[in-house]
Length: 383
Ligand SMILES: *Cc1c(COP(=O)(O)O)cnc(C)c1O
Image (tube, rainbow, N blue to C red; front, top):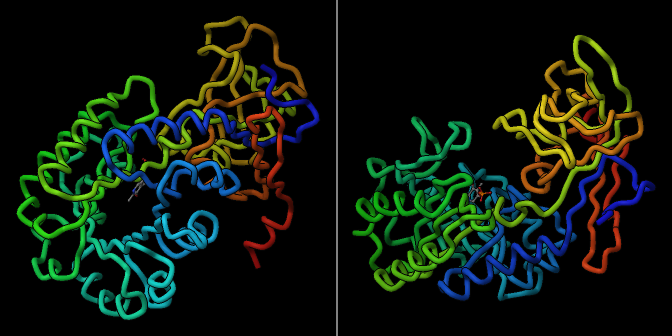
């Protein structure tokens, strides 16, 4: 299927509604079978023009601080009491907390100290707000330190040693977030430690939030086992269970399309694209990983080999080495697969490079450019 036409300006992200709906239907299956509530972590996917679709399935959003909470309230949970806004922050600030209290259904504190500092204040502003504490279960098999919320010296969540039983009179639930792109076995391991250390505090709680990092929509994820684990947990402790995936919502729902601007040669052939690994595909450098390019092979696998590079002046702005059946030429489109999660939410205007447009491929196969960016985005962040 040709899913873009050559008139579309690059760079652009194209999110395919049909693929997004497939993910949402799978997540909804987990909700219905297990009884868990699933909310969207805006950190990983925040294309709010798709929220009318996302809202048909998910129960709300999880936000990290004021701005994500505002977006959740405005675009997901406006005038809709059935949708929830959960707000967590590694540390809340005096200047933000009152507004957060007004627009949040759950507030999740990172430490007992923050909880004691703000609990009465947020309850005075919003008596309906539900208070939770984030636990660090100190177990994680997360593959990379930068993405391991339970690694050595982690600041995220309260360890058993730092738990203060004084929080129990204020909280309705506990949260943990310990996974990153992981299957259900990793969750099972975390739950063993979490239950061993904290189940003595579950009495009277209304919910436990299992965080994100569940790779539910990835092929091979053991969905039936997840459902079984949630059902057992709910039955044993008589609590609601929340999951708050980000990546699993946006997983393999679309692409980043770019154009070859020039091909230079310095020992190897190098194609310069109108996009940037640094500014538009940051996890390819941070994780790091090599994004798949449609129609390409590994370096050396096909006849024509190229290094793909970005259009910033950062030497390391490189997507990787790829091979193609035909030589690349100026004007060709390069399509990076699976670029809808943890991409545009992290984009920068580094080096003045243009932000990619945001495009939706609707279920009726029409393309809608929902946002184009220009010079203003660069200038307005500077003074
Ligand atoms: C990042 C994050 C999530 C979402 O994680 P994914 O890996 O995108 O599923 C959920 N909860 C918290 C607290 C997070 O920091």
